[in-house]
Amino acid sequence: MQAIPLVATTRGYPDSGNVIENVHWGSVAVVDTCGRLLWSAGDPDYPTFTRSALKPFQALPFILSDGPARFGLTQDEVALLCASHSGEDIHLEGVRAILDKIGLEPGHLECGCAQPLHYEFTGTKPPQDAQWTPLHHNCSGKHSGFLAWCRLHDVPTADYVERGHPLQQAIRATLADTAGVPADAMPTGIDGCSAPNYALPLSRLAHLYARLAHGPNDPQLGSAMGVLCDAMTARPDMVSGQERTDLHWMTAGGGDWVAKIGADAVQAIGVRSAGIGIAIKIADGNSRALHPAVYAVLDQLGLLDAGRKAALERYRQPAIKNARGAVAGDIRPIFTLEGRPVKG
Image (tube, rainbow, N blue to C red; front, side, top):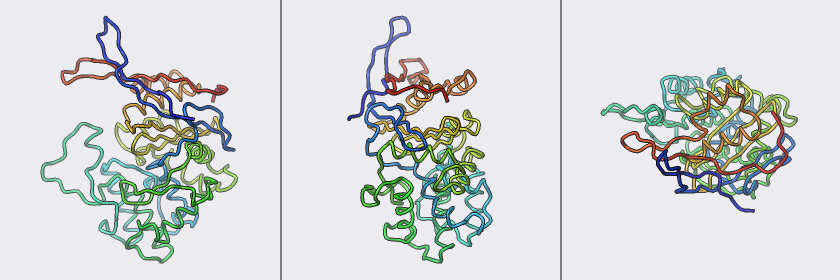
C-alpha cells in the first residue's frame, strides 16, 4: 500500500472559491489495544521514524527500574521525561530539579543547545544577549531521564547517547519487546537531540499509544504505563507548552487522550475510553498538514463533541494568510478513513 493525499492547501478569493494549490500525502493507522487495525488511510504499516513520539517509551526502562521512586521524582518531573518542552520557566526549573536529585549538572546533558520553542509558538522574540545551554533544548527532560537511568544503574554518564551505551541498549531491547518487533528489524537513526531513534510500522506506533492510554490496565506493563500516562495527561503543559498542539489535544481530551508529536509531521494519540491508538505521518514532513489531519481523524472517529470542536477549531481548516493578514486560502483535509466507524 502507499500513502494517499491527506491534506490540500488552497488559494483563491472568497467570492470566487478556492483552488487546490498543493497536496500533502500521508498515512493513518488506528488500532485497538490488541493491535488490530480498525481504520486506516494510505499505508497503515508505513515505516515511520517515531521521533519525539517515542519519548514515553524511551523513558520505560527508567520507569520499570522504579527510578522515579528511587530518586523522589514528582509526577510533573515524570511528565518532563516524555516532553518536547518549550523551555518555559516551569520546564527549566523541572529539569534542574531532576538533575539536582541525581547529582548532575546541565553540562552533563548531551542533547546540544537550542533556542527555547516558546518564542516560536508565542510569537515573542528572545533577548538579544540570550545564551542557550542544553537545559533549554526541548529534549532536556528526556535526557535528564537518560542520565537518571545511568545513575540508577551505576554506568558511565559520558556518551550515553551512543548506540552501544548500556542505556541505549536497554531502550532498544525494551522498545522491541513492547512493540513486538525484532530489535534487528527496527531501522535506527540519529534524532535531533543526538539520541538513537527507531522506525516502526505506523500501526505499531498506534498500538503503543493504545496501550499507553490503557495505562495500568495494560496486561504487560500495567503499572509503568500507568505512571507515564497519568503524568502526561495530568500535566500536558509540562509535556509541551503554551500554544502547542499536544497541550491542546490533551486538554481537550480531559484526561482521556494522551498525545505526543514528533518532528517531521508524526503524531500519536491514545484514547482510553475508545480503547484505540492513532498514528499519523505526513510523508513530506510538513507540520502545517499534520494538525488538520489529526483534527479530521478525531472527528471521523466520533471523538469530537461540540465542546471539543470549539476548543480545537483552529486546527479544523486553518486559514493561510499573507504578509498583510489577508486570507489567501486554507489548509483542508481531503481524506476519509476506511473501516467501521465506532463512537468513542
